[in-house]
Length: 69
Image 1: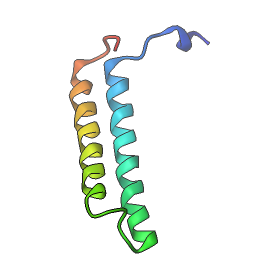
Image 2 (image 1 turned 135 degrees about the vertical axis):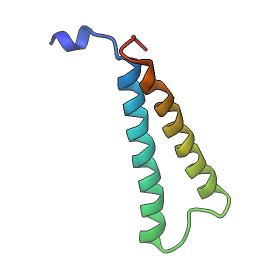
Image 3 (image 1 turned 90 degrees about the vertical axis):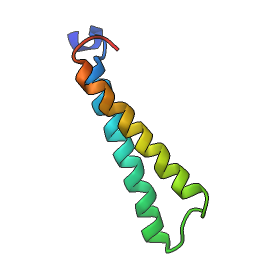
Image 4 (image 1 turned 60 degrees about the vertical axis):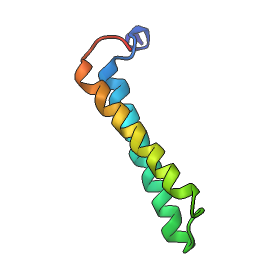
């Protein structure tokens, strides 16, 4: 259980944010395909933009290395 005492690093946080953003974007697009109608004409592009921002934020954290977040 020693890994629980280590702080999360910026690289790990970046990878986690990228994974969350990709899963959220896939879920939004999957919902659109399964339900045969979009979530909303204004809401869906904003939600996809939000997932893109989360992915970009995660990508900026990865080069910062193994310093604690």
